[in-house]
Length: 390
Image 1 (spheres, rainbow, N blue to C red):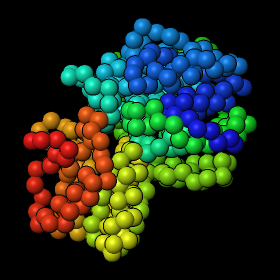
Image 2 (tube, helix red, strand yellow):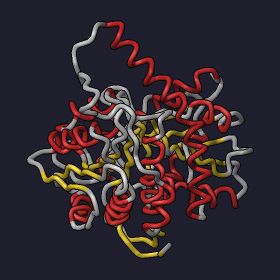
Image 3 (cartoon, rainbow, N blue to C red):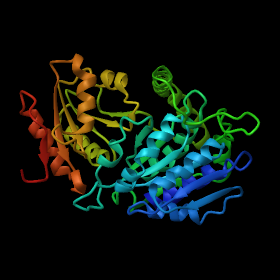
Image 4 (cartoon, rainbow, N blue to C red):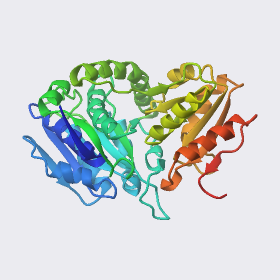
């Protein structure tokens, strides 16, 4: 295990590459690639990696990049790609296909604002538009979580009890282009953690089947039920693989949620992504001043960790949900999920704050202002914009 100073994109490219190489004794690795700022460095890293058994396929569009991954995965290869923003939007049809085919593809998505107006900075709207697709979603706080989540994501996706694709997600530039000390596990460690992929429903010329044919309503509904059942199994299976990860790599990895100073908190901040680092520092300072404030970082957005959130937030009377995204006419998407989960707690005030949208900085002062605002509130109001004049 080496510690290097690398960017989030480098960390993602490295983790994808060693995970792909770990499948060399099986059917190898295939990556469909197409560049888009700010993820281009990820596929550049992968394209320059020497795989013992595999192919890097440069294509003409993001739609085709996922198409390559689908074809490769159906043939039993370990398959992955990376994209951002409008590239993800162009890939949309095949993103849904990959989930409905139950293919364990992994995609690193670098959150970038959807345009127009054209903007290359961090905003979670691009990946959250796939909240209804059959994909597991992990939102990473820092470079180390990117590496760890890629490796954990492959193991989870390829588990025969799951067989669902995984998105590993990071904020544009704040993580993707920022260099930090990051542990990069050697190939032998990764080989031991990721068993060769044996996809039981891969294409086999000796047993021909139809893939993607027309079905009647009953068959379609049945396939959705199977996906739902797999999603319900994810939290338990994720916990199993977390323990295996910690044993193999010697450091812990957060699963669905991380609770910080939340046990006796009467006020909670709910955050995701890189905002968690800043919010945790503010919570530490306010705690030192005697305030009972806690933090919940949501890492796994799909499936949404409802029971864990209910348990952690049980003692809080006020909750601020900070969203780096916006659903037109409704507010923040994480806030909608939190409200739905906590509707059994009608006495809890759950206020939405739209902050960091479009890549705006989320500073300690901004988070402190949110805490002060929430302290003084007696009822929930329409989602509040922070950092922008309204």
